[in-house]
Length: 309
Image (cartoon, rainbow, N blue to C red; front, top):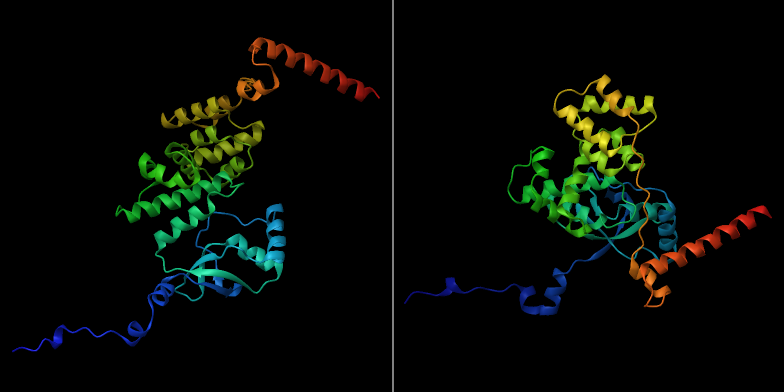
């Protein structure tokens, strides 16, 4: 009779004497107070850490209550830990004079870390268009790599898949088309990106300008400076068409940029449901408009009287 000893599995000491609760607790993520000197920024982090009013509020909150939400970090090959989320909190801790901050350590590969980094920041307020553009492209590249597709694709190929773009924008409530448009901004020179961030160039014409060659964008910057004007949407579309046809040069660009712009529409529309609560249900839109005009006339006369005093 053969021995069955080889089929016997011996449990470890810890398995025998630990409870299910203890084993489950060991699997849970732990919050650790980490020295700030051990925390390093995420490579090519697309979101700026600004010393603005919001940062001042964060510093005051940390001084009073501490860091309420731990940062997420992962171990670095060169030692220390890499911040995945929590760059602003770390800076606020530095300004508040704290030596440590609470973190959760996770073992993540580059693509998983990139996706978490983007998703944890993309819903913040006051994100600049250039920041959103870079973050969306980083996440889209990571999703493509996770799906086993080639990582070295140019941005036009990456933007071509609307379904992937929709996945990228899901956390921020953006459609695939919106994500594609933001990613196009990565094709602008840094100077033009800055003009978009500064709201000197609107988003829609900026997307059209992103199709210009780098040397054409440099020429455009010179033309903007000389004409003291930025392209309208129709001008940006013409610049793009001339570029694609191979006819965009200094003369044609100057001719387009020196054209008189059409005045922008100045229509104002107020939805009826916002006005209805101020009027009886029987009032027609025409009656509501007449009363609004009379009230505005009275408001204007009062302002004039106040200015004359």
